[in-house]
Image (cartoon, rainbow, N blue to C red; front, side, top):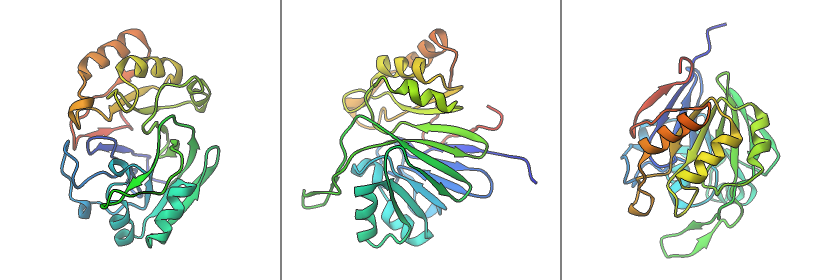
Length: 237
């Protein structure tokens, strides 16, 4: 059996790619049209796509990528059902508390405090439902993708999943800001924190280095700040 390897790429905003050398998992693929970092959707062919909620800046290029790459797409029930109606054959509707297997790993859906809907070009909102966080077990690591969420006390329960990595929004305005994200870290107790959902648009610009300094001085977690397009080797981090 080959040695376990796991790399994390941040495409800006909340879009991430996990690669264990055999399978790839794409999270909230807002790639084309992302002001933080332009990534060609044709450059990724994930086995699995995980969606935390239906907002356009998280669903992003899911439909086109999934159809081209024949990806499994795991999302909450209403969003997964809507994606199936758009012709995504691998759409897998799920819900909070449920665990779903995918190529190389599993994902457990957790609560998140936010809203969730997809806006069509004519302004109509569809795919109503609820958002989720995700506890992902893949490549020998347990990764919490919080999605867009406010701080909530049940993060103490999520900590019992023994998190290696937490992908946390810090942008404020639409999600937790740095102060609440720091409190989230203290409850979640991950080994590594990767901040996201900041600096994409003016309302969510944040001094990420200040956040890193506070987390590392006030908790036992380490913070890795990635540039959009940057890669973190989670095997050696």
